[in-house]
Length: 115
Length: 235
Image (spheres, each protein chain N blue to C red):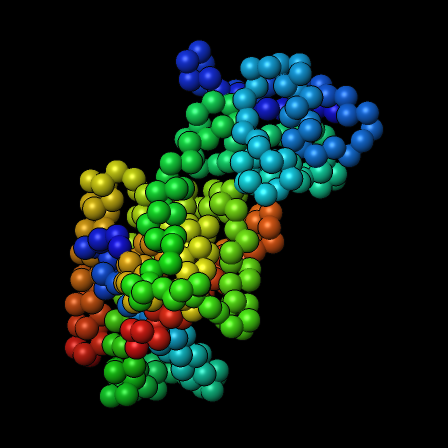
């Protein structure tokens, strides 16, 4: 057992499952958006705003945002632990990724729920 | 034919270099180990490991024209691609070089030791032996044949980057060999040892291990079986 305190769930199985589930969520979200855009060729601003600010789409967008952040964290954590051998550089990069993820989360919530 | 050999003697060389040799094969499709023996006749300082010379001991794993394999069972015709003008022989990648083509296998064996490569069974053994049915024994086929030559693990980028944390395909194949053994009682203990983000889950399934295994084994499939066992246990 290799101890790791910076991975997403501290468990290999947990990270593996979250990465796959989050990929499915983001994939479904993209399909919903594509389906809507293809089904509305003459889409205007008002109609798009009503769609994206509807209750179900706000929940879907929030879920997609959380899934993207979790997926990105796991992926970037793997990349940093593969290619950054210096622990100071690696932890600094991971910290920067964590701060960026937190900013995106708050910013995304503001955009999605502040309209 | 032209042969280029990786040379490095830490006592005299500041850095590794490639040295070219001309070898007369007599038109025969020799094994790479035979080519090395002919080079050794020219230059007895060239160092490499070998023992059984028939693909059983796993001593002469080398990187031959960019692909890992056993020198003793790899013929020149198989090693030389259509565009290759010469034979290029290097040590297995990723492991520290002791001298020329000889690598330090310490990291590889450390990972192997971690998977507890022995039966865990605290039940008092019967008078003669612990029996298995033919079906139970069949589950070990494709697993027990591994000769620990390290061709797979040293072809794996995940092992190159984290040789101290990732068990590697050879060790994980052996781990499943014991997880699949009906006589073993250490399944829970073995799985707990692998449930971290590095030991097993650093495998991304690129299957380099399958393409280089000189025994035709499939470590990626074994890793998939272990992952399924971990998932079943955790969900």
